[in-house]
Each structure stands twice: as structure tokens, then as C-alpha cells.
Amino acid sequence: MNMRRIAGYGLLALLVVAGLFAYQNRLYLRLAIQQPQLFQAPALDQSAPSLPTDLGAVPILSFSKTNGYRHHDSITASIKMLDELAADNGWQFFHTENGAVFTPENLQRFRLIVLNHKSGTVWTKEQRRALKNFVEEGGTLLAQHAAGGDQGYDWPWYLEQVLRAQFVDHPMTQHIQPATLIVEDRSHPATAHLGVVWQRSDEWYNFAASPRGNTQVLVSIDEATYDPEKSPMGADHPMVWWHRVGKGRVFYSALGHTSESYSEQDFRAFIQGAIIWGLDIPKTNDSEERVNDEL
Image (spheres, rainbow, N blue to C red):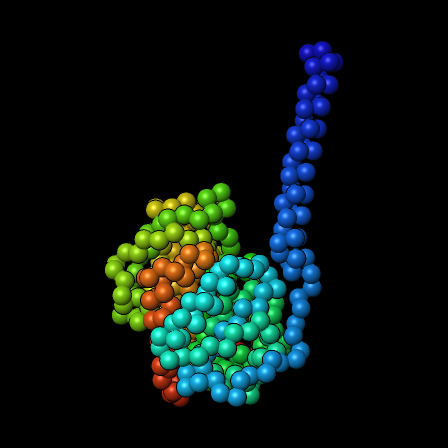
């Protein structure tokens, strides 16, 4: 091989590396423009918003602060859907992205909290304590999709007690895919309207381990019907579950990445059923699943 050919191969390799570097830089630049909070220290709120004097007969808090990845369109579509469901059912939502709303005095005015694609570190230590007490003393927490989609958490109680499953990743090459969901429990109000299988398209989360055995799984996904890519979970891949935390309950759904989800009849009925279930918490002295005080 002559020197000219070697030099040509070397130049080609340099051009390939330079191209990849430039492409990666463009991706980071686009991400920095679209998701600037990912490159900044978490902004934690200190001044609570003013709550209306009259929150209605069935007040629900909807919280969508994002210091992690922000699902812009999904949050907007979800808020619209929640307000429409509220109008149909006599509920009233208070929507906010201000974490300082989490005080004992404020939270006692709500029957239910919806974590509407909340992401990243969004609460101070005092705000975390208020949320923890709300749940443990009988409140209901409904966590949607990105509320369980961070790759790391600096609050052990939230991961271990609220979520009970660590998000790992989701398909990237085929980001949104049609798949078959298996409805394992149709006795729950969130799933009572569904058949045994539920066909829909979404972004499908992979978790480090299944929460089965530590939660009541309502819906799982059949990995044979789509490509989970890097981190398949195999035959046991839950997507929706609920469980008790102290006297309260938590409902988590990994569904709902796409804004189109919130216009789907079955998905809307699914969320409506979850809310109806959450608003009917029995007030007992049951101390099962006590959690530690770690914040």
C-alpha cells in the first residue's frame, strides 16, 4: 500500500470522526435550546402561589414542574384533558408548576395530587416532607409517565415508595411504536372499560426491575409486539400499577408520552377511572407498608 493511499484513508477517517463530532454537537445544541433546564442547576420555588378561596367540592392539584426533561406538548394536552374531565365530573383542578405549593396547609385542601409529567428535582426538603406526609396520612397520588422517567433520583423515598421501579431508558431508533398491552386486572376503575388486550402507540419505558410483588400490576406490555431495543425486561414488563404507602395510595402509569394520547377515548377513560379510584380512599388505621423517614 503506497503512502498516498494511506494518507487518503487517514483523511477519510478524520472526516468521519469530524462529522460525528459535529453531529453530536448539533444534537447537544438543539437539546440545550429545547431543554435548557437540563443544563442548569434545579430551580426550587420558595414562594407559594395563592390558592383560590373556593377550590370546589372536589379539589385536585395538578403539578407539572420540570427540572428534568420536559414533555411540552404532553403537559399541555394533559391539562386540557384534565379540565375537560373535571367539567364532566364536577371536579376542580388547580394547575401549577410552583413547587412551593407543597405545604401542609395547602395540601390538606386537596383530595388528590396529579404529578403531570413532573421531572427532575423539584422540591425543597420541607416541600418533600409535606408531600410525604400527605400520602402517608391518607392522600392519593397519581403519577403520569415522566413522573417516573428520571434515570436517577436524589430522594430515596420517592423512588422506593412512590415509584417502586427505576426507569432505565426507552426505544430511541423506533421512538413511538404500536404495541400490545395486556390488561391483567380489569376490576380496577382505570381498566374496567378495557378488554384483555389494549392496542396503542406510545413511548415505552424500560425499568431496571419489575415492581411486581411490591405493587398491584394492572397493565403490562408484550415485548414480542414491539422492539424495546437496549433494555428489554422480558416476559414481566409492567406499565401501570398501584400500591399503598402508609394510609394513602399511589397510582403510577408509564403511558402518555404522546400528546395524541390525551384525545384517545380509551386513554381518557383510563385516566378518569384512575382519578375516580383515587378520590375514594378508605380512611383506615392500616399501617401496612410503613416507610422510613429518609428524605
